[in-house]
Amino acid sequence: QVQVVESGGGSVQPGGSLRLSCAASGNIFSINDMGWYRLAPGNQRELVARINNGGSTKYGDSVKGRFTISRDNAKNTVSLQMNSLKPEDTGVYYCRVDNSPYVNWGQGTQVTVSS
Image (tube, rainbow, N blue to C red; front, side, top):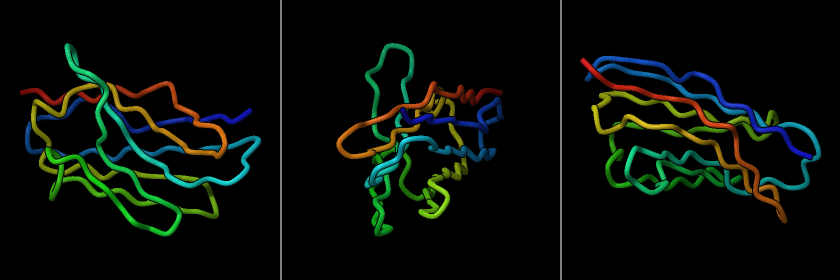
């Protein structure tokens, strides 16, 4: 069993910054992609950013240039630096760990951007 634990959510005003962190532990085989997805009210869960074990990244169109994903392969952690936050970034952010052949998700952390 793999545990995926997120931290770092909270409330911030528009234009502010937050940093999310995620750590995977337990029965880890071989982690390929690690990434962040978000679920906003009335929307489907969408990709925010993901990074593979070689460091290649992919971002959702709405966050390009504002968010930066990074990972520490030795520690099985992934972080998301979120700058210039907008109200539409509000949602629950989930960490996804591709622990082949399994996929594990965290419990989610709330991010609220509001004045």
